[in-house]
Image 1 (cartoon, rainbow, N blue to C red):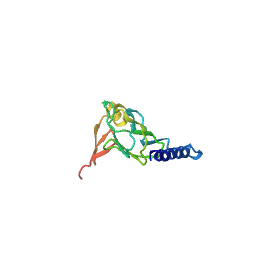
Image 2 (tube, rainbow, N blue to C red):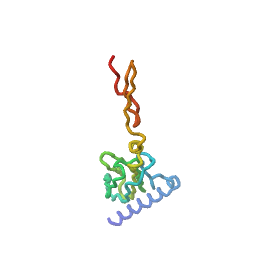
Image 3 (cartoon, rainbow, N blue to C red):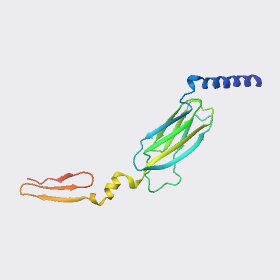
Image 4 (cartoon, helix red, strand yellow):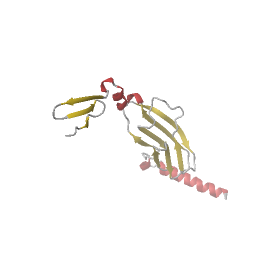
Length: 170
């Protein structure tokens, strides 16, 4: 009985090996693939890196993104996140949940160790445009009053917009 089982497993292994290494499948995307979330922005820095393995026979693997040593100068949300994995058997569906900071791997055929790598980028607080405008001394909020005999308007200008605050009553 054991010899029959070994023969069947050997046949399946050789069949799969020949199928994967045949000419149409040599350039298959099942070897190394990636998932991207967000986009690169000016002033971003690497905030999270992780390499690991998904153990065999785990069809649903949830990876919690926890930064061991959070940096005070980086924002908490990722601007760009890239997940790379190597799967010889089948493609993997990856879902990133930004509110819970988790990455979920859905694996169709989880028979082998699947190595993966994650890299996340966050903006540096000092390089964000809103912070630079707010920190700039020329962009201070100013209140100006213009008076005439017919109308009076008060305007706030300099930070993000220039809009009238109030109109006088007739």
